[in-house]
Image 1: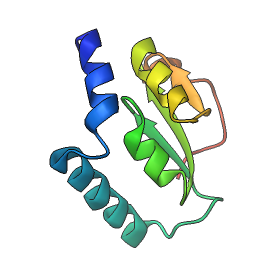
Image 2: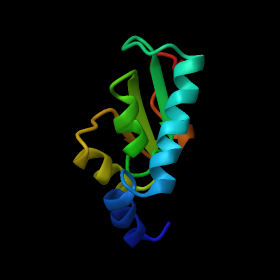
Image 3: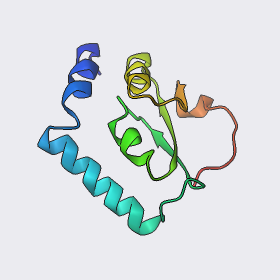
Image 4: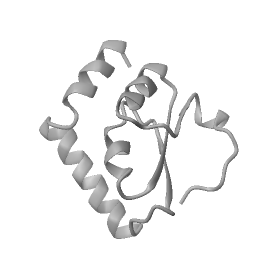
Length: 98
């Protein structure tokens, strides 16, 4: 993705109808299939700038992974800390995700 898009998405993805609706749809879908609990570990692969991660962090133990350092930088601006930069194949061994 072009670097300038990360800054743009970071600014609009909580208010723009497309991004906001996608967050609501995904959250409702997960809540029906995986009851919210801080004991439930979720991994968002390709987490982008972290808007969905931030929303789900109120419900689950969320972790994010993205190959772009720019995306991860924006996730950190949202206060997210359980992040990995790199391809999924290089993700460090950890407890399993739900």
